Amino acid sequence: MRPETSRSPEAAGPPEERVLRQLAEAVLFEGLADRDAATDAGRLHWRLGPHRFRAVGSLGPFGRPRLVPGTVEMADGRDGWRAAPLAALAEALPGSAERRERLLAELRQTVALCRWNADTLRPPERRALPFAALDAALWEGHPYHPCFKARTGFTLEDHARYGPEAGAAFRLRWLAVRRDAVALALPGDEDAFGRAELGAEWDTLLRRLGEAGYALASHAVLPVHPWQMRRLERGPLRPWLAEGRAVPLGEAGPHYRASQSLRTLHNRDDPGAASVKLGLGVVSTSSLRILDPHFVLTAPALSGWLAGIVAGDPLLGARMSVLREYAAAIADRDGPLAGHLAAIWRESPDLSPGEAAVPFNALCACEADGSAFVAPWLARYGVADWLDRLVEVAVLPVWHLLVAHGVALEAHGQNMILVHRDGWPERVILRDFHESAEYAPGFVPDVARVPDFGAIDPAHAAPADGRFHAVPSPAFLAELVTDSLFVFNLGEVTRLLRERAGLDEAGFWARLGDRLRRHAAEHGLADRFARLGVDAPRLRVEALLARKLGLEEARCSRLVPNALYPDALSPSPLAPDALRPDPALTILRETP
Image 1 (cartoon, rainbow, N blue to C red):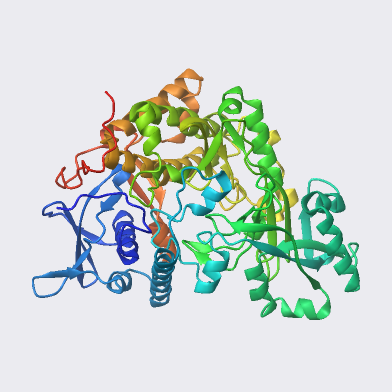
Image 2: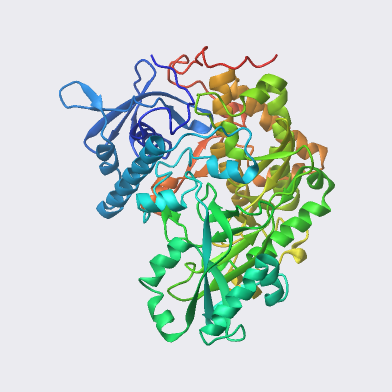
């Protein structure tokens, strides 16, 4: 039996295998198929419609299936098995035919772009890259969602020009929009802001605006992704351009390149300058990558509030910082172009001498030679000491923000940045809050300090029902953190450490649960910890594939075994040796 490995997804085999495997894992995890109780030789069996499937694999923490690439098979109807076609698995899923067809198209686009990467690009040596370059070089994409590189709307030429993998640099297009159709949230005077961000190029834009017969008094200026501008000029922006409601100002400013999140762009010419997040009419993973219009103008107030919480708590101030989203602009907030013309400016990491920064999902990545990105660090410090340190400086601050301050962040692998010295974890930086931070009004110690989001955008004045930042109870907050930080983020790190270093995953998660309880006791937070409801046999997680298929809301979340709660863990029904670490790939054994 072939052991599971964590080779670089772009280099470990045909992209069809990874896409099929992740689709099958999501199907099983979200209960979209009927699981067969019987197992054979470490295989999972399931039924979807008229088809029977199987794959070599096991169940990991939180009940997440872990299937071996290349082992997903479908019954051939003659008492035999054959490699499962991607289309057969996708077409057997629940949901409307239109949704399934769209999903299959995105799966095929993911395969095509992965294949282009593998055939065209040379995998970079990533360990020595500075932060912005590394952020672009993490090609792997979402480790769970099967449409991890769909980018529907991109051609292969667009992928090469604007995708992070090729690392191409480009300048932004600029658009002047009549003031009755645009709203700004800037840290000060508009002209001073423009000069601070663009220097002499700001004067160039104002000159072009004047040559077109307009001025800053009538029009505000905002950046647009060049792909987005090309798309909008041919469609919904045409009437605005014809009547002068919008005025194209051409290219200007520094060169940018895409980060791993595609719509967030890093300044190539000055890595210490702000990153810019722009609306992009591309579908990738679960959603259209425009900027939600009701979360744009609130971004500066939200991140300023978070920065204040961090600065005012000595425990957080020593271990955590946030990248403030300090400025925002949006056109046609309540109209048909809502979210398609919008921008958010975000700080870049500020590092001290000797520090380096890596996106958190680099910790579960592998290099082109198959070695783990973190292999040198583990060899230097030992798995146990390094992992304990990671928990203290990266996991506990996010958890403390939740328990002590009643604020939950969607701390998945792209939104967290680990700051280290020669691989030794020092602190964590959080980013990208505007759509992924929540609070419960009755759980925030000082609710008077919460920004009046409803005054910024009237949609936020609605009841705390979870549609915006305010949620009805602490349990909602806990779900966001346990789902993103534990199930879909740290779980990928422990998976790699189990495969490469023999980590006792069940033991780690039980110890982490004990550490969270001890943290609450140490800081007088036991009562607040209890209100989160995380000390239970099951946790609720979001079902991303079910939501993409448009299934009813009740099927878009799911209760899973809580690996943090010792009694929730039980032996997998599969053979325990099904995925034993490959000795040839093992870095070292966990120290006693």
